[in-house]
Amino acid sequence: MKNIKYTKPSEDLKKVKFGDKRLNNRLTKTIKTLEQQNKTSILSSCGNKHAAKAFYALLSNEKFSKQQIKTEAIKATTNKIKNTQTPKILLVPLNI
Image 1 (cartoon, one colour):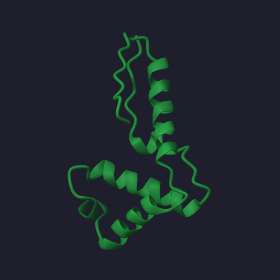
Image 2 (tube, rainbow, N blue to C red):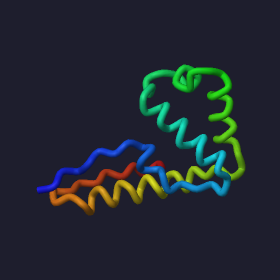
Image 3 (tube, rainbow, N blue to C red):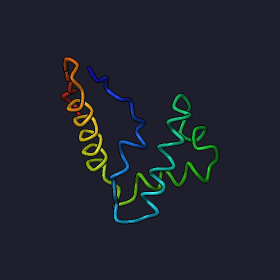
């Protein structure tokens, strides 16, 4: 039996494209930072005010799409489930 391979969010979200290379790079950089510092505030995780401000600017940018991130996360999870032979139970929160 194959086990589900754990992947980091930065790997799961590689295909997110906002149509602006700077926004894509900021998302990747911030997600990787938050993977390492996930128990602190965004300011602490980002390391400095400039990086935190850049992250907040990403979130407020008109090209930023929570739906696109959600869609890519769902695709990555679905692929992980499909590629395993272990029993499958999927819990889906209803308030997404």
